[in-house]
Length: 247
Ligand code: BV8
Ligand code: ZN
Image (cartoon, rainbow, N blue to C red; front, top):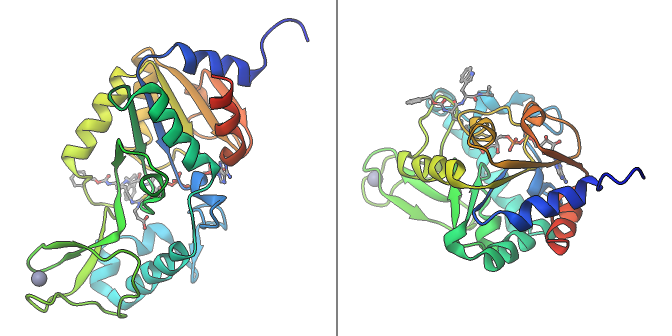
């Protein structure tokens, strides 16, 4: 070896020396918990592209189909547990101090919170919550089995998952906090995302433009790899613990 430190060592040095740390996660960090990613199996579900099912138009056109998609994912999630990657990110928050740490996730599975992370910004909502299409009441239904077409007990209108679909705006308060955390962090870890979906994926370029060191962890290079200071190739369930151990 000609003396240049291994990528994992360079990444550990970036993480160690950063006072403010942010993490952006995608479906890849939940893959080792047994949950399907979006573009893993060609991104198809019952022959539909996710981008065609997770939309307000699909819900208006065929609410049963959309609820089948979400009830199937809720059932899978009821059998899933946080994996080593989720758990070590909660450990990293404890070591850096909550005021210096922000976990921004595109995932709707709630596994970061289940793993003990506190400062979690859920850009795309959470599959455990439902929202009434009539009176807008939001309730946390955990992972209990829901009917094929769940209705609001108050007003009788259809319930929908409290999730941001394609073509829908992200929750502004959550987005603003995520954007601010990205500007202020000195190190951004990008883990398990194909960096295709915006505006979430735009946070990676924003971090790099703000002078943060960007550590990308993925099985393959992605659309964001050009912004990465260090690329660690492999599963997050192994590499996140290895990275934090070396910190
Ligand atoms: C908005 C909730 C405007 C749903 C999600 C054309 C038409 C329509 C829209 C657009 C368009 N072009 C661009 C857009 C905008 C659109 C968009 O970005 N589309 C993409 C497809 C091009 N964005 C939107 O529509 C957003 N809203 O723009 O609104 C607006 C503005 C103001 C006012 C009104 C309107 C809304 C985007 C949010 C959509 N909702 N989720 C649900 O979950 O059911 S996004 C969905 O994709 C999930 O949240 C998921 O997390 C996210 C991103 O996917 P990834 O997490 O990256 O997962 P993926 O499978 O792709 O990749 C997994 C990665 O992990 C891979 O790289 C793999 O290699 C890696 N991996 C796998 N295993 C491991 C691993 N890595 C490490 N270890 C492992 N073990
Ligand atoms: Zn209602």
